[in-house]
Image 1 (cartoon, one colour):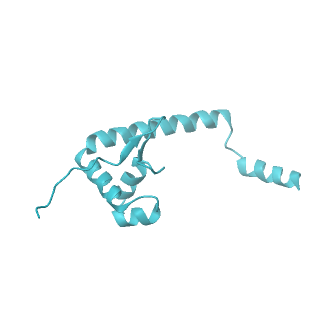
Image 2: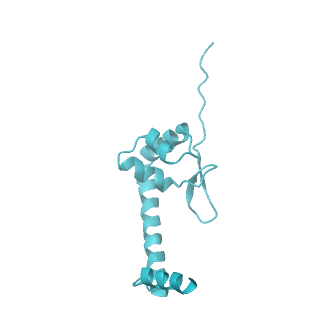
Image 3: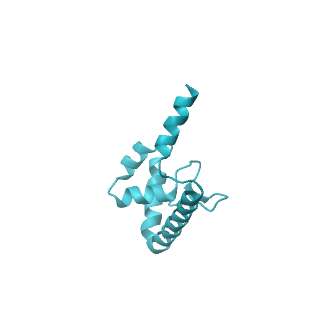
Length: 110
């Protein structure tokens, strides 16, 4: 019987906020790419994120390697967005002394 070669869809989807995630999980494309670039194998990534399937991680890594320029651009946009959100939050909520304020609240509540 001859082997049937079929192409599988890339297991990625974009959520309502524009974040690319592995289908049927909450794991982002960012997470897999950063782990891979830091030297993690697909098996190690699945161990760290058990909701992932090994085949899906390999497919996402292959997608990244074939479209590295586009994915890197997407990741830079996400980093800029995260930095903007952090700046906005820090301007609204002073991060200095957060630990002390939280401990004081705990003591007040007894």
